Image 1 (cartoon, rainbow, N blue to C red):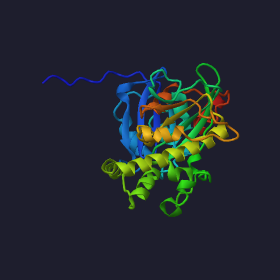
Image 2: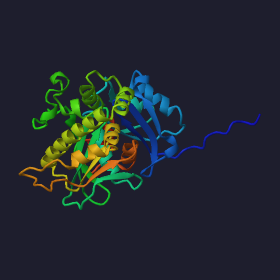
Image 3: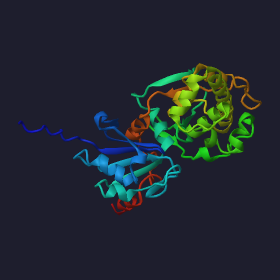
Image 4: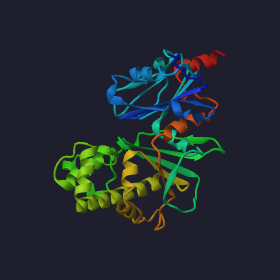
Length: 329
């Protein structure tokens, strides 16, 4: 028997990690590009901790990059990031134990903002018009909800702002959902998320929807119900988007991402209702910015591969140990 072929030694300068509430994607990157055959997706429920998950991934490769850039659904702090939708806290110590010395933490939507600069990302145009400003906005609707306002500094660099906007109170002008699910829809994420979409379907069906498979079965088996659901959801998201445009003036473009976003924007009834949302006295009737949809679910990894800090003082991003070592040098 001939000896098994060993995988060639990879040259990677960065590990990139996109940690969501449901799944985690990891890959190795070099020169601003994800090394495609290294990308893996893991179900978070299969692991007790992020450390266990990371161990499975790093065991697949002999190479150990010196740097990791981690985007997660949470509030980044010096040396760690706690997840808002899972009982995990990711620490720089987890990476240091694997020989990765320089660790940066970002909010998850910041990675998607950087992904808009990638030449390998595919977008679906939802509303095409000429940009009339420099400020932009990424909106993620998946397991949860979040957004990231950003603007270009120069050709390759962005200034991004982290947030946890899914936990804001739902705007009071989205009145059609005020009594949905017994009045338990109180925050933006209560409505615009996987569980929020299931709430809308369940309200239309008259019973609780437990998971994605059941929600799809209900939508496919009752076309009249599906039309009501997508019309309501389109009107509600249109009203939220109008509020976000007043808050952030993202007339350089709005980019939507996430599994729920891809599902709802596949329905023309939903899109038509959203685009028909009337303006207001602040924005005027012609209020819609350019709107695009991320077509791929690994876009955040590509954003993390090209990410670079924009400040001379990078303490906003770098882990405590990495920062102290930088000061000593």
